[in-house]
Image 1 (tube, rainbow, N blue to C red):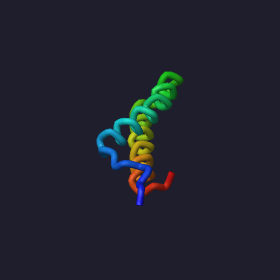
Image 2 (cartoon, helix red, strand yellow):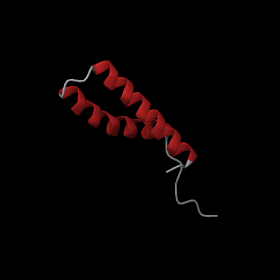
Image 3 (cartoon, rainbow, N blue to C red):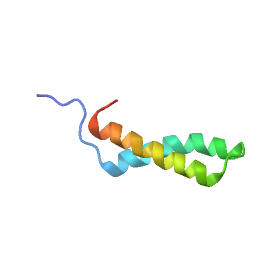
Image 4 (cartoon, helix red, strand yellow):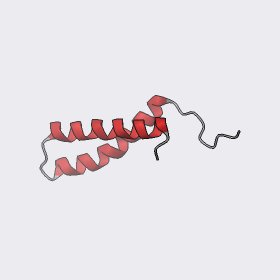
Length: 58
């Protein structure tokens, strides 16, 4: 059968997810949030995005 989602490189998906999450957390840091907490949020969001991408949840 035809697969509309071609297999993508894991590094590309991780970089895209981290950039998207990083934009939001960089805004939060500029508003006074702790940078370590912002980094943790970025890593967590990238991980969730990778899981969703890998298992086709979204």
